[in-house]
Length: 401
Image (tube, rainbow, N blue to C red; front, side, top):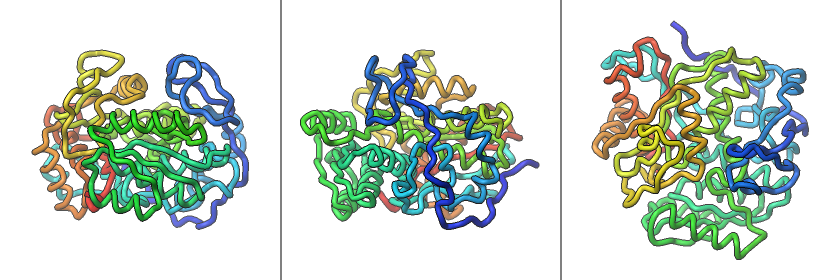
C-alpha cells in the first residue's frame, strides 16, 4: 500500500541564498506578461489574476528535491520555487510543514483505504491563510510596499496583520460586522487598523478597494488580486508531493471560498511535472462549498466558465461565504484540468463533519468540517474509489471561532 513518507528532521536555518528564479508575471486569463521587479495587483490589460512564472530549467539544473527535503522546517524550505529573493525578507512565524494525520477510526467505517487530514490549523494565526500572506507580505515588502489592506472573513486578516507586524508594515483590515469576536480581538492585538463593514465579504472588498484607491501607497492583497498569495498557498501542494515521496495523492478535497488554494495546489503540481520531479501527475481536485453559498459548485455543475454572484449568501463557515470568487475562471479551470469535481454540503453536514474529526482529536474549523462532509459524500457516490489516496484539508482551527 502506498502512503506518505514522513519527512526527516530538518535544519532551522533558511538554508538557501538570495537567488530568485521568477522571470515574469503572466495573466492567467489573457497571458499578458508583466515585469516581476515592480509592484503589481492585477493584469494591466484585462484585469485578470497575475501568476508568477519561473525559470524551471535553471531550477532543475541548480536544485534537487533532496535539497528541499533537508531545508528549513517552514515554507521557506521551498525557496527555489518561491518569489522572494533576499533572505532578510523571508519572514517566518513557523508556517508550513503541517502534518498529514491518519484517521483510521473514521476510515474503518468507510469503503476507502487511505485517507489523511492535512492539518492546517497548526499554522501561525490558526489557519492556512498564514502561507499565502507570509509570501505576499514578504515579496511586496521586498519590492517596496510599506502598508497593506485586505478584506476578510477573519483568518486572512489575522494572517496579513501578523506578517505585516513581522515586517514592520502597516495593516488595514476590512471585515463584515459579524466577524468572530476572537478574530477582532486578535487583529487589535496585532496592531491592525480594523474597519467593520455592513454586509458580506464582497462588501468588505468594495470598502477595501475604495480605501486603496484613496491611499495609493497601500498594497491590496485581496484574494488573487495580487500575484503572491497563490505562491504561498502553492506550498500546500509542494508539501503533499514531499510527503508522498514526490508523487501526487489521487484526490485532494478542499473547502473553497476565494479559491487561492485550489489555484495554488494545481500550480504546484504543474510546476513539479515540468521540473521532472513528479511524473506527469495531478491530484483530482475537489471543491467543497456550503449549500448557502455555492457559486463555484453551481458553475461547475452547469458547465460554465464563470460564477454568478450568489445572492443572500449564508453559512456558519465564514471562509466559504464568498458570493463570487474574483478568480472564478482559474478555479473552475483547475478543477476541470485535474479531472476533479465540486460538491455542496448542508449546515448540518458541516456540523457532523466537525464532530467526526473531533472524534480523532482534530479541532476542525467549520470549513474543515465541510471538507470532511464533502469527502464522505463523494465516497458514498463512488466518485472516490476504495484504493484512492485521499487528502482532506482542515484549513483552520476551531479555536478561532
